[in-house]
Image 1 (cartoon, rainbow, N blue to C red):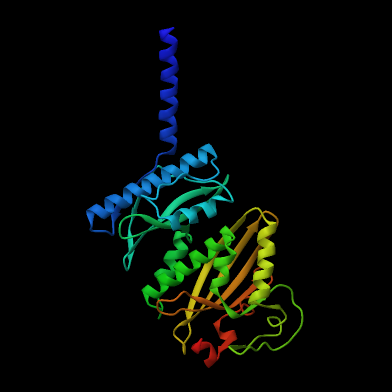
Image 2: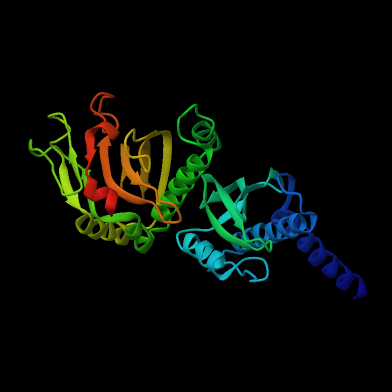
Length: 324
């Protein structure tokens, strides 16, 4: 009888060891931070968080059980929002990365995650000065991020980091179907151009005037409210959304240095629909304020030539826009 009990205990112990080995993640920071105590806290909190996510994914929990000692309430909510559409887990057991500092916030990038059964992407962790994690969002592909950051350009490195962070938050908001946050990113007077060729016309608003070719100006034009309303309907009709940004180009406006044209390839794959498009955003960045999107255009990547693709040159910014 005793031998059976010992065998039973041994089997349980063996199962627990295997489970721990399957889910445990260790993160080590190899550069980018001099404060040894803060470095240790960030490593410990990151390791615990990623391990907890793996445990929750393996057990298929409704939501991961997270401790506010390692991650802030805001950070917990952001993870729960992503978790609603599917489990995700870290696919590396040992992570070595550098910490990146922006003002008083630290960031660790390139953390590989599997979302659902096979969708792989990297995530970014951001930290408060006390070492707690405060943000968790989907990263641009490492080579995409680096190509924009290291590009020879009149745009200074700090502004390029802000633009890249903006794109990562934008992508994450769409994947989370966070319509409230998306709505805050668009100006109330934003111009949305998308869809099928309709008719030829000149497009003018109080804030900018477009200069378009015949093919370009035959697109469906929407206001912000129309676009957000349709986006709500799309989000409510799909179970999940995979979104990828590739071939990112950023151009600074020659006359108005706070305005940037961002052109990229957007690959959209939802539970009911797929497309591959060329996305252009006219974005205004202000000091200590969130970026504002004034123009968003989408064109079919297959059917749009380089000459026909929207860009900064297609939109003339008026003085009333600058004052907003």
